[in-house]
Image (cartoon, rainbow, N blue to C red; front, side, top):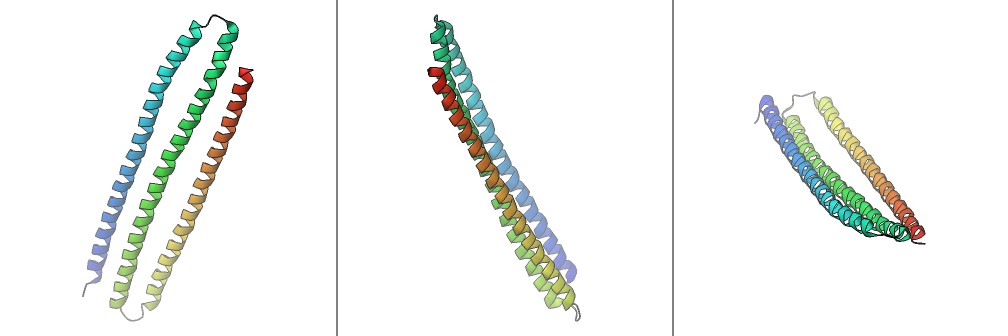
Length: 187
């Protein structure tokens, strides 16, 4: 039979190790996300520099003002499309990173909750007579904390989904506007 200090010591050590594992997991996910964003930005910057140089050379080679404006308008549409693609890719990276964070946090919470419930159950077996109310209170508090976390998680997911929907709507609206401008410039 375990004594109370040994139970708490074991639980504290397990909780600390679980938190350390969670921090390592979240840090790794954060670095992966940042790595993807940096890679995306470097590729976009490199492609943009090359395309800008080529576009400038084409524009400088044009002698007719009408041809200059036609060529400028023709180059605006692909640029807008690339900006939209960049925004979508960036949103995809951040959404994936957020999903990984949520998944890791939920897994950690479930594991920690299981350990805490197990500890409380073990303590209740060895608890002195008359402590049933205190143990029931602790179990109730754990249940309430879990329910609160679940509600917070649902709310966070709804906020993330709303933000993603708003970004997609803005991107689509920008895309339609850019297409209209491009058509008008070609006329």
